[in-house]
Amino acid sequence: MSDYRFNVRFDERSEAERQAASFLQSMKRGSRNRFVIEAIIEHMNGSSQAELLRQIIREELSHVALDVSQLEKSSAGDLTELTPEEQETNRAEALAALDEFF
Image (cartoon, rainbow, N blue to C red; front, side, top):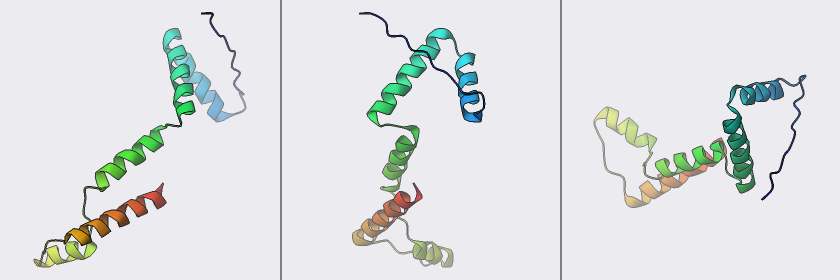
């Protein structure tokens, strides 16, 4: 299999591109190549760090029952258990809020 070679130019007038070029220059040659290939594959697959973070937060929040009124009751010493329906409502509301956040 033959190698594919590409040249990439960075615009020195762009701060973001200067930082990207500096980052790549700081890497060893083989590491630089691997980094670019993995970034392209990740982009093609539609995955990103932000999406991974969203997924982790959603998974964690799906196990947490949030109810502000319960927090108020607990500070007053009147804590009661949430019903399964209340827990499910709270989970749904937390995930909806997370969707708005991202």
